[in-house]
Each structure stands twice: as C-alpha cells, then as structure tokens.
Length: 122
Image 1 (spheres, helix red, strand yellow):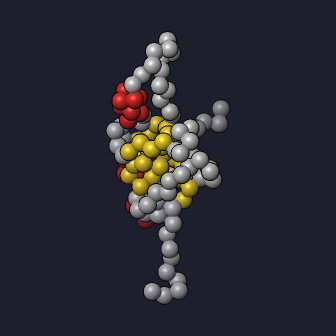
Image 2: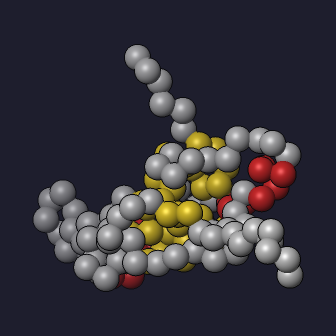
Image 3: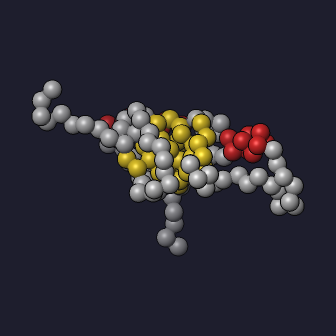
C-alpha cells in the first residue's frame, strides 16, 4: 500500500445520542418513535409498537458507511447529505433504540432509500 491510499470512513452527524456507526454500504436513518399508548390512553404491547415501528418509511439521514452511495458518487450524481429527509423501503433493515431509549434509528442499505424530500423555500 502506498502513502496515497485513501481510507474511507463513515460520515455521521454530530449527535452524542447516536451510539452506532454504520459500516460498508449501510446507512442510519432517525425515525419517529412510536409511543407505547394510543391517543385515548390505551397501552400497547411491545410487539405492536415494534411492528408499527417497522412500518415507518420516512426519516432523517444521520449517518452512512464508507461505501454507501458509491454508485451515485461514481456516476457524479448527487449524494443525499446528512440531515436530509429521506423515504426508504418499508420493513427494510433493523430498528435500533439508542441507549437512553430517547431516539429510534433504522439501519438499512443505501439502495433501500428511494428519494430524498426537497424542502421548498416558500
């Protein structure tokens, strides 16, 4: 290996609550946390909230592995930026609660992201 070999590293937002780091072509998306009770106050079982959490298909891109979006960047296409709102394949990846149980993340493959939401300046 020569001295000019580029070492690829994961890109992550600066958030001390983000307690995982993606590898390879994996991305981490922060999703809305599903509450454990309904608006009427009925408590939901963990299996129901876990299932509902997998139905989430929208979130904020908070980290991506060193090989994520390689195909896009190799073709000079725009790569989603950290903090972008994205839509991804329902039921893909795994759900991860951070250590404090205050945030929920989905760890998915980069190819499972379909679109990023454009924010209007209106």
